[in-house]
Amino acid sequence: MKTKIYIATFLFGILFSSPIYTQEKQKENNSSDKEIVEMLKTFYKEYVTENDRMPVNEEKVELIKKKYCTSKLLKKMGLIEFDSDPFLDAQDIEPTLLKTIKFTKDKSGNTYKASYLTTFNNKTVCVKLQIVKVNNTFKIDDIIGLK
Image 1 (cartoon, rainbow, N blue to C red):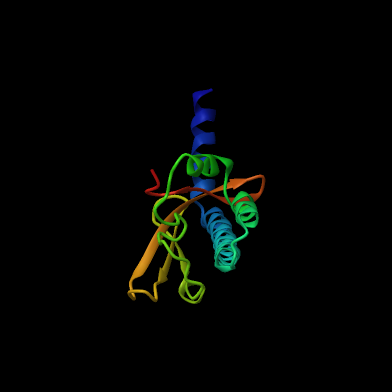
Image 2: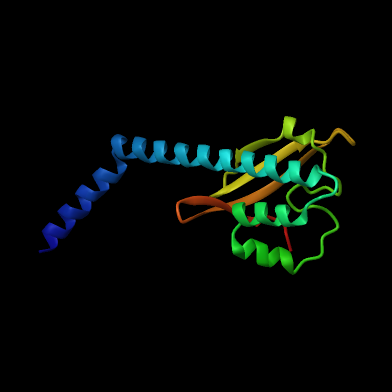
């Protein structure tokens, strides 16, 4: 009986360390990364565009956040009074940021960095976002550093 367990364990080890499994897992991760980056691009485009309109339609902004953020994050944000926009780490919306914004995967788990160059002082602003999959859709679950 023990021999069968050892053989089964050995075969599973070979299967999960095989190049085919590793390549498939890599393709799956790359596909997810692309989906997440596309979701973030779309979110920021909609969010910045709507916030730049005068007057700002707060209902539409809330619908955008509801579409792209988890209820956990929205609840957390509802408990905090902000001095600056948490998605931009800035007090003012600069629509030009859409031209320079980039999204990169952080080394830790499903954390992505949104970074852009400000026209105000020519500095790079970086916001770290935790992403989760909810019902086959990626959503922003947390803003790292948000208290």
